[in-house]
Image (cartoon, rainbow, N blue to C red):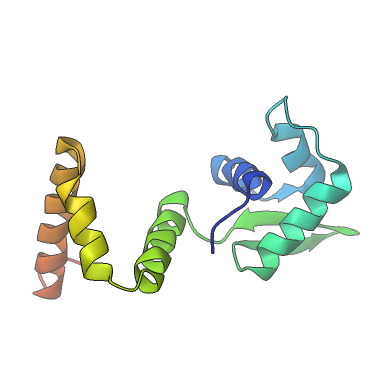
Length: 125
């Protein structure tokens, strides 16, 4: 479920864009210290499409790509995957909460309040 280094860099490019990007656009926007081949970027985008991380639309002979979910939605799904595969989600959450920073604790409390309110029908999903 996790992303490799180049997959993460390509997803960062897509998340920063307001419009779908072609392979050459993604390649041009990667960090200067990265210099993968055009075909490597094309293969990674195809793999991300297979994983459901990006959608693609035909443009001439090629495709344009767009992230299917926001960075935040993707991170939340990765966290859910970790919890599902951890063996004991409750213990993982308890260990995380006990080591959380003050800011992380504040965020967790706010999320718990929102979830409780939503479950009671007081907030939209």
